[in-house]
Every structure is written in C-alpha cells, then in structure tokens.
Amino acid sequence: MSEGQSEKDRIHWLFHAIGGERLNSRQLYVLLCWMFIVLVGGVYVPWRAVVTQGDTVTSIPHGYALIFWPPNVPSGAMGQGLEVDVTRLVLEFFVLSSTAVVLIHRWKTERQKESRGKG
Image 1 (cartoon, helix red, strand yellow):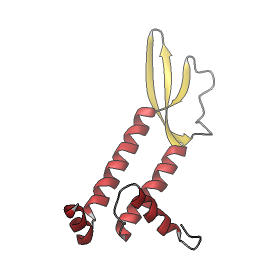
Image 2 (cartoon, helix red, strand yellow):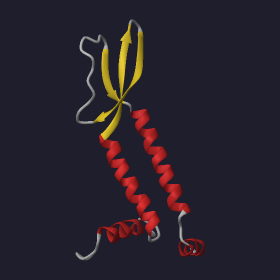
Image 3 (cartoon, helix red, strand yellow):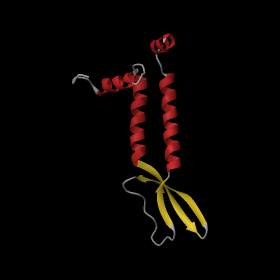
C-alpha cells in the first residue's frame, strides 16, 4: 500500500485481502461502528459478584466497570469476590457481530450481488 492511502482505503484493502468485496459506504460505517463497540466492550466489561453462603455459591450481576478498575466490593463481605462475567461478554459480542454481519450482507449493492453470483 502506498503512503498516500486513507484509513478508509486501508480498511477496504484489508477486507478485500481476506476474500471480501470492496465495501460500500454503509457497509464500511457498520464495520467501523462494530470495531469501535467491540473495542469499548472489551475495556468496559460486565462484572459479577460471587457470594458464598454456607455450601451455596451464588453469582450476582454487579454492573459494568473498566477492566483495569473493577467495581468496589463492599468491605466486610464474607466469601465475596468479583470476576468478569464472561457469559454476558460473549453474548454481547455474539449479538453485536451477528447484527453487523446481517447489516453488511443486507446492504450489498447490486454490483456486489452480481459479482458474487458469477463466481
């Protein structure tokens, strides 16, 4: 790639290099939004509190906080700890990625549809 290429051209080139068509502006917007939201979602994650009461271990959603700066655990809480709620995080990324794929596919131009049908 030449040095004069814009960021938009680099993203088009990357997508084309992995076997895709050149993106139109709506598809590119969806892809950029998806990348931004995944980045933010990977830094601002869901947490859950794990509480032990006797033989019972309970997991309670504890909101969202920065991964570098977890939410506070109430002082004096016995058997309580915090962990990233991986299940919710994976579910968020799955729903977000599925939506992005559907939108990118739905907003194909006629030329993209024709070129895909020929190959």
